[in-house]
Image (cartoon, rainbow, N blue to C red; front, side, top):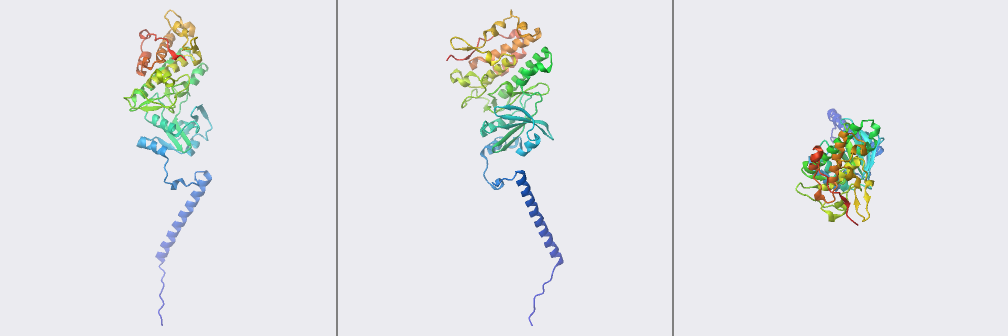
Length: 376
């Protein structure tokens, strides 16, 4: 008689097996649910990027440059949440639109969505690198960025008074006194100069902005100016006095002559000084359209500026300013005219500009009349 094997059931082992199967089943169910949710929300990509070893060389370059100092990185879906699907537009620039947003642990922010056709990956990385190396009261603070291939954005601190150009042309509507108006403009001029001094001298790596203009100066709640938009900025070593650039950098009306006509001198921090001078003249009400062309095709700044700056001339009547305001206006004009000298070597460094603005009017000398562009 053959002996059949006796199969005994271990209730303890059976219970353990059932538990393991339950855990596996729950895990599979969770994975399926997450998979479905990702498809519905558009987060999931059919290209399965999480399983690709390919790395984006541009973003890897950014990470390599900054290491642990890289600012916070946001996903594009985060930007939509913080801006309520980009519902409130603050402004539009050459490199993209800016929207008002809010982050729970930060407060109000400004989100700049870079236009794909206007901003190359190099320009995006350049701006992040430039701003992330700065920390100054007169330079905008970068809070984070987004880089999802074609979707790129920068997250900045929020500036409630907008850009300088809006203040310049709408300050009358603010119902402030003329005296307060000119004092604010004067302090804004000094603040911008201090911001430039920091970029030129205060950073470990010198930063040349190359696009100083009213639209790129933002004002906080106390009208403290902050330099923004580093899309055209260029980094150089502190000991370098000149840089090389490919193509023209800047905005027409604010570009230094040597950036266009290379025979006039080398491109350097003095190029930002020129743009600053044109910015101050614009703040004072002298538009770029005030430049006139003489018979020999040379472009000169209007002769009447020099004539009316003579001590015997009454600038108070000409510009409708008080005696106290006239001192501020004369200083700003004289300093700006030094800044827009045709030859870079004739322009003062930005640290000297601050010294001239904060010094006495009597210590300033009138510069020679600048030829803004060489004869054709």
